Length: 320
Image 1 (cartoon, rainbow, N blue to C red):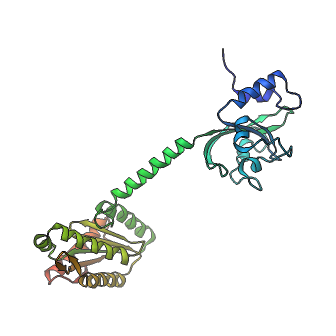
Image 2 (image 1 turned 120 degrees about the vertical axis):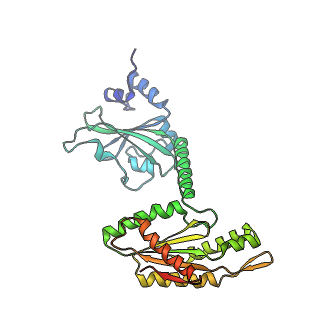
């Protein structure tokens, strides 16, 4: 035997409390035992025409007090129609039912999540009314949000250098290629700064890798403090770092590179009994018409950096 959907029973049976028939009582019993909110409201006045036991238990018995209560007042404790009301989606321009609409939202009153199935149905007096069946999905939603948060954190971790908290090599190239495309599309400038810590191997050999890590962390702190939010600063690998600067002139890029060089030179990093004074060699390159790939821009910045090393280190050179 086929069980009929209770939504269809609402079409045929009156829920008028004044003269409940046996069929109406049976229908109420079915709807009141559903573990979901069921309510019916008028499209034009928003007056609630029916609210099942689940709804009354959560939001109160709307039949107590005033007989004509608005759905947005009872269910959302609002002073006017809800901004997310789906009534406009349930009827076409001719006032005819368009079929069910399923959506999810968080109720402002009880702060729980619901999956709603809204539909225009014919009421006992022949008019179209709104029927909503809302099922509590809070536990499922919390799990979904927790998994989403975990994915975001995992993605962020995969793009961050754990030691310096800068972007890592993967992020540098991922975002850098986006910067390159944007610069080409908008016909704007873009600069790259590459630098390498001088004699870093000697720090590791003389004082241990923990001392080297302390230096790298301090370099990361300097970069995080001095680059713009729109720039990409990254530890490329080992003691090599890079900065990508969108919408930046040659003079601005050279000025930043020199400022970073001086700041690193002035660092005094104490590790146990040692005081470490790192320096770095810098190379700067501007995006040219021939740079069809990010690697071409970075290669010229690298060449300028090695020129700084060849000429005594702790210098800044521009790729010409």
